[in-house]
Length: 105
Image (tube, rainbow, N blue to C red; front, side, top):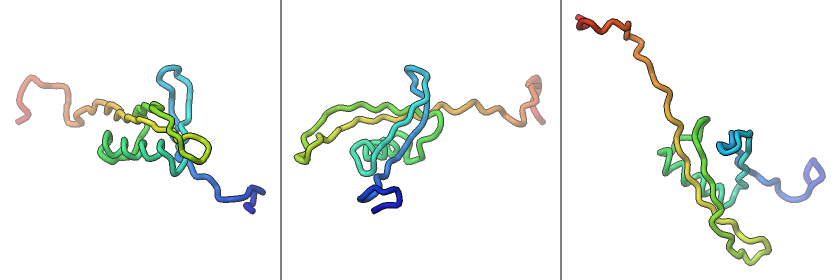
């Protein structure tokens, strides 16, 4: 028995929080570990972000593509995931003094 009175192993989940781009509301995406959703998020991170972590400003699109029989009760959810990297903020040149009338030498 666990400290909270429940029995069995605790369930782990990867939780991503952000803003729903369609509604503007704060939202959370819970991906149980292990699950198809967690595996597809990991694959998309490696494929779309060259392995870097999903960061603030990145867009995550998740689509439930199928529900396959698992033979154990609840069907297995199959997902498609795409991650789009945030556009970097424009960087200003720290050495630009605004005077471009003559060469710097």
